[in-house]
Length: 280
Ligand code: PAF
Image 1 (spheres, protein in one colour):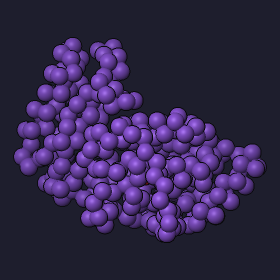
Image 2 (spheres, rainbow, N blue to C red):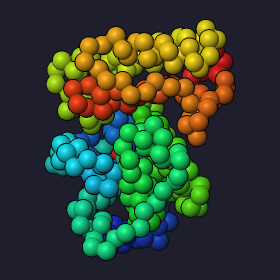
Image 3 (tube, protein in one colour):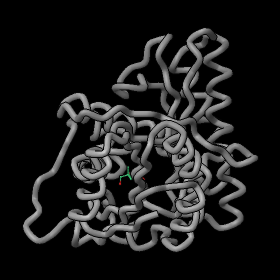
Image 4 (tube, rainbow, N blue to C red):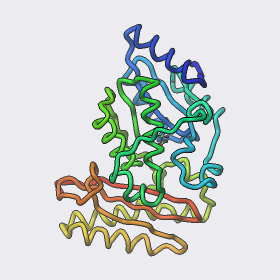
């Protein structure tokens, strides 16, 4: 496994693999790997000749300086996992490499990037799109893999790919969950034991919403059921509990609907979602 830290080196690695006729699967990450990342890497490994993983805590997608400072980092453990999973190239640049003096261009998908997570974290999705666009240009993957846990990010990236004609296919992998249902996320490491126990309420709320949806009660009742369940936990600060179209994050239709929730617990922002079965 090669670890490269400059744009020139990752570009050269990708060009030589492509010149040799090998396909490239790309897993962009911010490190602090959990089983969700490993599932993405395994899926990448199964589907392409070459697997490239990026590890970069992207300052542009953090709206508050303290979030960036407290974001978990564990590069040596991540590299050991990547090696064990058969990754070929890890791109782990410094911030100054990605954003040298003078870098000013931003990629924005408009309203889709400004609602829900975009409203709670202004500029977040511009930061995500800007770095992912750079990474796509450097790695030139055939396929890029993202986790459904960040469903709005998936919708935003798909929009960007379509609008800017990136020749990249997207593979979306299922959310990996802890035994109590909590969606795996690097941010979970920031929860203390008490808040970690309470955090399973997000998945509980989604399941309550799903059973309301299945009863045919509609979006409004589904949202009320989720909000009610979230509010039952002491010390939680729910932000939203909604049913949306998974591609636009606007109004859902009965056969194309996603339940989404977000809440802060002990100062940590948690999000989760569940596709609502059209047959129900
Ligand atoms: O999902 C993430 O880890 C990040 O948002 C991504 C896609 C690597 C961009 O920094």
